[in-house]
Image 1 (cartoon, rainbow, N blue to C red):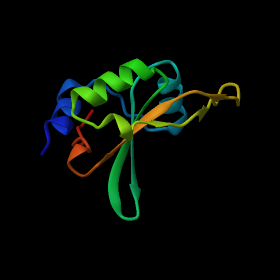
Image 2: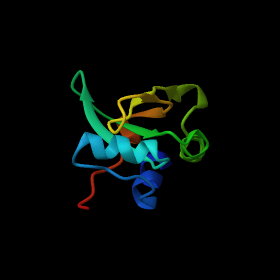
Image 3: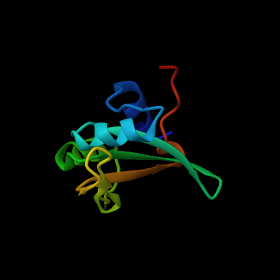
Length: 101
């Protein structure tokens, strides 16, 4: 397992939410939102934030390639407008293990 997944899990620098809306609101206020999902049968996660500098720092710290950082505006559920946000795709060994929070 790369150091990346362990670093994310052990540092608990991100938050997961039961409801999508709460995760988006957290990301849009500069927090780090870990959103787990499955794509074509593959376990994945997105690490999402509107704070580009913080998201870049975390990704580079855990060994993600800078070219993999993606710009993806989020629709703010409070106003309906799109707001700037970015995410890292985490797949395979970079998907943090699930914890019982």
